[in-house]
Amino acid sequence: MDIDTFWDIIEAAQAGAAETSEPFDEVLVRHLADRPRQEILEYAERFDELHDALYRWDVWAAAYLIGGGCSDDSFMDFRAGVIALGRQWYQRVATDPDSLAGHPDVAQAANVRDRSEVLFYEDVNYAASGAFERSTGDADAFYEAWHVFRGADGKSDNVVDMGEDFDFDDDKEMSCRLPRLAALFLSPNP
Image 1 (spheres, rainbow, N blue to C red):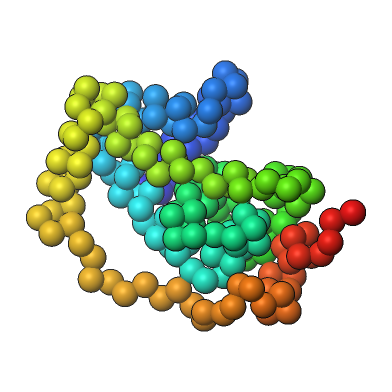
Image 2: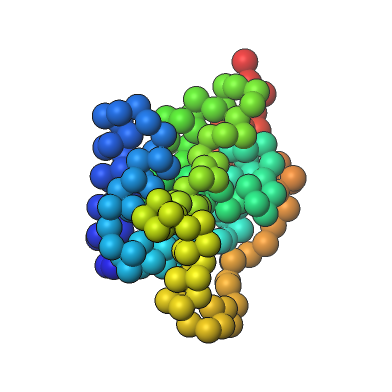
């Protein structure tokens, strides 16, 4: 599956969710389940590539500010949430995580106490497996097919370059690296 087809699926699910008021992840699962199983696996492969590309300290720092903290698991959910925003927002975040300060949901979250759900979208991580289960009726079918699709080892020896590590609890450092997000989330709210 090429990258354009991947984003077409995301955008179709966004449109479907807007039309039906159903959760995005449920619409995404339905769209994927209507595709051949090979395409579901290819979607999962593209999703993993895009998800992994956001595995950087600067993106994690943005998630930390927006969520009021961010564990390893939460960072997985945050990256899935960025993908769920669609191609344009994904590209903005990949280029400049601080650009999330301009997203309406993020700006609104700066004014509420419990903002842990903004852009943290766990269920998007499991859309391909959910679609495979819906297609086959077997909860384990995706993982068996994924093992075959990715090869016997299924592991990558690639070392991820996350960029420069820095202290997320240092307000001055965060303000230098992510000035717009820091202004939203580190400044006292009125």
